[in-house]
Image 1 (cartoon, rainbow, N blue to C red):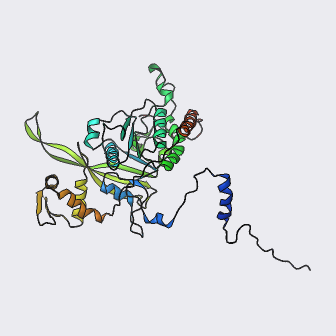
Image 2: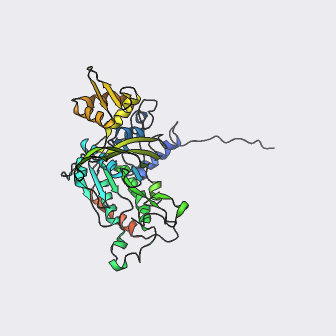
Image 3: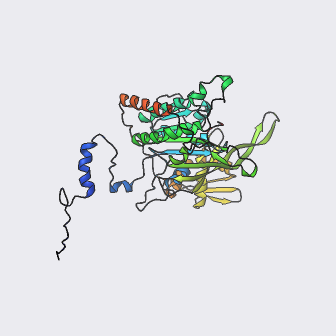
Length: 418
């Protein structure tokens, strides 16, 4: 009977080379111009993911997540090269959040392009929030006629290295087919879910382009009732289509949970009347791929004509860590120099902090270390060849021109009533 012998395993290439090492010799020759291979090192775990500040210490901390074993929060702010879907009901602070992030990004040396499909941005309010509306080299407001035109702007500015892109709102753009209809024909030729279908074709490629250039994106979406839902079965969902649930790295829902009121003189009645001057907003991360913060919640404040009120947020943090003392409605804080600031009510104490020289900066200084929120990372944008951008725009136009078939499973409940 013949004796069976085992064949010795043989390896080709250099001794000790792994399968990846051997394959990479082929990759370098066959795909020399590709940037698909991402270099990683141990140092990457010792620093936060490149990000932009939201303009709110609480929101930076929420997105940043729990510090890792090196004491570094994974991403304390808007992640660069990724998309955030910001959604909620009317008047919950979505536009204010986006404009505040824009103002903070620009103040740190960055740039922002605001795609305003709704044509609702008020220049005076944007300026009050700190946006340099008169400097088109740092902040640009774009109000496209059609959804496809807005997408072309998004592609151009993302390719050019703009730091922050805001889309307000993702379901308010009018598809070219509908825009070209005669007034008396509007609604006759529209197809259910057309806006959702356009985003479904555009977002996958756009997301990759943002990852290459480091552009951060905020897509704002309103909550609307599902088509056909009624009574107890009525449910609301964020508009724009299912693509806006798949491709963003972050999905944040905002909700106004408290109204802030105060006494204000009313010229009509010639009396001091109770007026709404702001509100408390709850932010919940329904999806988070940059830290372990998914499902977490946090609260911040919005003040009319002022924007995100970080002072009130810092007061909450200081009170939680016993830096501020509160007895009933009275707040008190003993500063490092021994001076005491004391006031009745949140609004009055806040004003005292702002009016006292150096108090606001000192309160931030003693409070923020508890959050370990990290800093901003603004790097110079990479240059892109104009011809390459033009070629890619042609591809985008061809992509958007291809109408999806009726049986492709398009989300038919999204983006039709904007």
